[in-house]
Image 1 (cartoon, rainbow, N blue to C red):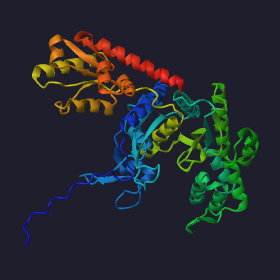
Image 2: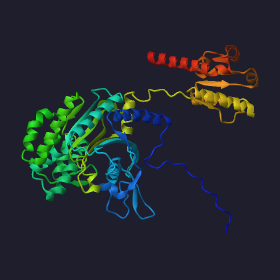
Image 3: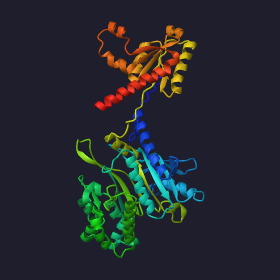
Image 4: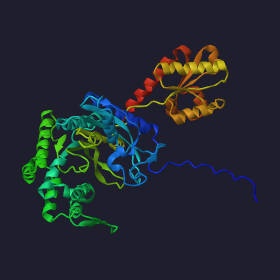
Length: 507
């Protein structure tokens, strides 16, 4: 018998499926983007709020499955008091819980914005992640659709603040009540038809995916997909299907408004929905937001199962090239609507609410396509090199580094193995450092430093053919008194910035 202990297996570094690491460039791009969004929200009088990543699972509402382990759609764990908790699925359910829990202290209407990660326990795929960032704004306690109109205007202002020009986006607005009126008009009103109404909502939610023909099958007998799987339909007859498809097929509201009003005539919900759409249209027009920016559009069908009134979606209308090399319209980057039932679940009384959510990662992709993100430069740090390791020398290097930082210049003192000076310059080159500060014993005795312009040095190095001419040229390096260090570094950085500006203008 071999008593030798088995050699422990080396731990394999691996990223969980559906999750990504974010690099410095991505983080800075998100920070740049969210700062601009936050500024617009603050101008509208919204205040920030932060809720925990975890909520009790039952607070997430419809995402709680009927099973022993509530882990379908959400990531869940059981606490030591045997209560189930889940990572938040969106930012709206935690807001509803917060409002209900603090209802007596909150000033209504409560206007708040939140940014943060949400988590989906779903099968990951290309462009589909289990963790992603959302940026939400909501008004709780405002029953009038003027609050919805303001949300649409704020979405438009946000996109423009991010550099998306008019003509490259549109905010499209629909109303769940109008669809309720259409369904009532075709005989699907009443509690006994609730299941069939839900099937209709789920069918028309597939409009983008399957088109009118596919939705017609789902509204009727059902649809078989390419694999042969059959999805049972809502069981509507052809006349009912035609009326539903007419509603979701409206692209010019002004042309179709009269026929739509006629279709929902006699239904209280439908008439109320048409009035609300017209009211929102009038409000945004009065405020200077024409149909080129905010458009009444009954073809908006996403989320109709969830929302109770107005529904709105921010859509980018410019073309991008997809992974197959095809030109496609970029599409939706955010949306929202009125969800009057969500807070009420906790309260036992009606609490109106409306809000929207921006998909940060998707919008960031769009801004990169437009060249609107990452334009602000991040200059790599000036490197203070280390020639000697004694306390006095190290103290001088650290003092220089702190002086540069105190002057607002990004700087670092080399922290690796300082004994191989060549490695320090290789590090500076790989890092993209613009300037290196060098001080050996002779320079220290004279109270001077060598300041090396690494960007200019790299450029000139291609023009010098041998070591002798390199030494003779003393490429892009000068000696300066320690007292002039900050001024000289500033001078070099300013010259480099001017060169970049000139080069950018020549392109």
